[in-house]
Image (cartoon, rainbow over all chains, first blue to last red; front, side):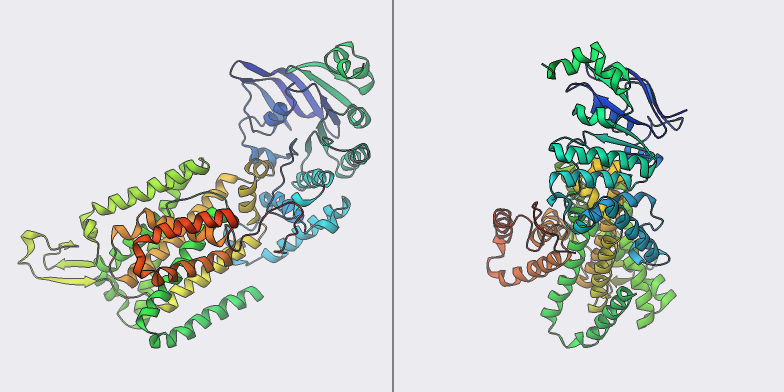
Length: 255
Length: 342
């Protein structure tokens, strides 16, 4: 049984078909990579899964329930969380508060309790605080927790985004080009980080990446998209040698 | 706990000052009350425009609803209030609390009606919609005879035959009547009690984890949604609670001025409140309070050139945008700068 099932999904914008009858899945505790040339429709797939777009046809099942009719925040509640290709941190909030936003959906204290600060309010706030600190400790961000998130170096901003996504306690984490703009050292660090996240938090990860070293290094299975169509799927070894993939994608960068 | 003590002691302080407020020169007393009302208006708009990042330009509309509804209740139903609660200090207090809540809740309901459909809009579009709403409210009031239409409202005539009206109709001139003017309930205590309430309301809300949802909506709606924040809900909550306090401010205004006119709540009033928020710094509570104080006192010094007030406001805004776009006390967000609020 797979955690996420994408069934015959098509996404059209006017005359342009961005994703063309895509069928694929992500299993439980699996780390899947999605690669493809620019404009292949990778981020669109993410936007379909997270409810930003409604697919023109087809269905997306998460834990055997369709997430297509859900709004993005409802999808987040079911246990799918994501990061963004162009980092989207909350600029007026500190690192800690950026992560705190992820707890908004699970807080018992609503509007009135939060304004009156009655009942279990303080305990709950302290619990959240502890959980945030615990996460920041794991990712080595505890020293910068009171800095503005956007004032951090690029690599750390990516990390904060991953922590923020993890703080929603997802079962499936979608990472959109986490290595973009990173130098080789940071990339190696990121690969270790992704593996660590998967093992420590026992979640499935679907990852979009351009950097072959990262994809081949961490992914157990790779899906290759080109012009919205899936042209190959398999383990890194097979993908590396697939003539179709080389033609569409790797061929250009390997001369 | 500390927070609650501070809240209660602030209320007690307001109450004690109120005991001596009778000695204040009426002119300064009036200015003081207007300062309080403007702080409530500006802080409540700050919740919408500053913290949640939704540009509302119709705050005077909510104020008008609060003012007109609570004042019409206090005049048209004056016999009921007098009969039920009497006219002692205790009775007046209960009556006024009810009247303030009527104003606030009416404005909050209007906030839901306007907010739910229009908060899907962004930026300029939302500004235009809320501006249009406030103008609609004003025009409706202007044509409602029951609240005095464009002549304003100062009280209700209750005729012996049971008829009620804001003006004496021509054919009723011979019927005996009782005139109920707007009771002067608003005083230093009530005004500043609500200033204290709104300050604690906003600071508690914004310091809670729940309140981070509002700031997240302002910064990045897509990211907020992806983290499970129901952005529409947060926008509506901000809008409705902002409207509620604007309604309270309107009720306070009506029961102080004892005469309300649709022109008190025109577009320029909305602009004035927006200027306070921008001048003080979007999302800065202290900044907005100081701006509200300055912009209430400033016109008193400029009485001689009061026709140019709006020009001065405009210039002030332009200068602010050039020199200090984040407002007097707003925090400038620039990468590499530490969060000083922490």
